Image (tube, rainbow, N blue to C red; front, side, top):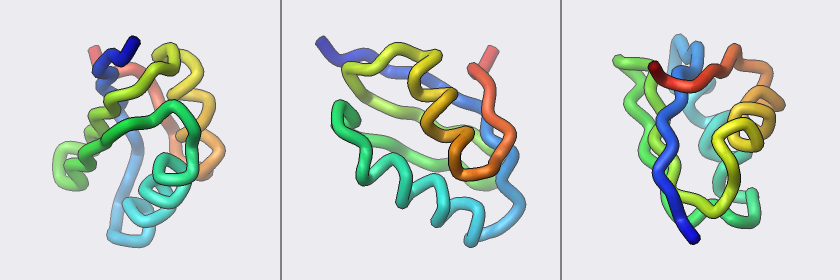
Length: 68
């Protein structure tokens, strides 16, 4: 079952955005994602739990938390 998760990711430039894109595009269970660099927001449609997504995106080296 897919769910939409919103993450706040500390991204400052296109390189940061690219790092997040690379990680999410390789991740099994992620169906789709949208990155809003200006708002530092990543919306992910996946079968993964929100915490799993935080852990995965954190591997890019960017501070990541659930959007509240």
